[in-house]
Length: 245
Image (cartoon, rainbow, N blue to C red; front, side):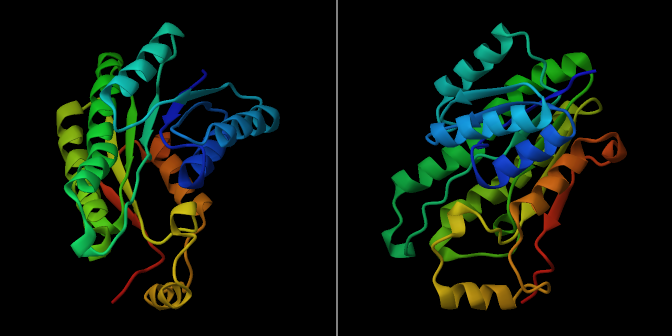
């Protein structure tokens, strides 16, 4: 039986890697993207050709309720059933603490928290009716214990996403498994411009002495969607290479 996964923020980084892992396992993929249209198109072409699966790109800003509703309507019009939802889309507006603005804070919370809430609520309705489904939220160790004042809004949003995960697991029990994956440092576009000395210092805090590759996070995300993980629920799985202080 065909299965479909919806991955937000899937045009690059962890999202793109996750799309490929699911495609390898013959899932049909809905690739949500915001601005990177060409990357989304290129990824769709790659997955179709390499894995012979159906791939649908949908542009939507996860910080806007109207965009999320439009995406859901498009999925419904095509009679697509979502078996797994991966809330991956996120932004980070890093700056000195004294330069932080309410506007930036609100944008970060809207994208990283309220977007996943609304999408999970709407997609979860149908999953609950079918008595089957998986929701996987991509949070961060920043939401647990790796705090950075330059990322105070990002850190707060990821901590709140963990709380959202627990509440959704309770709300959707016993039919939907809701879990979160909390990566540490990952080699993505978001981290490509780190100061060399700072990156070296952060790497030294990791037992494996390196940042993760996006595929290493994607494999954990996929595992949570499988039958082998069907008794894992309401959990936050940390994937950080063994962070220590």
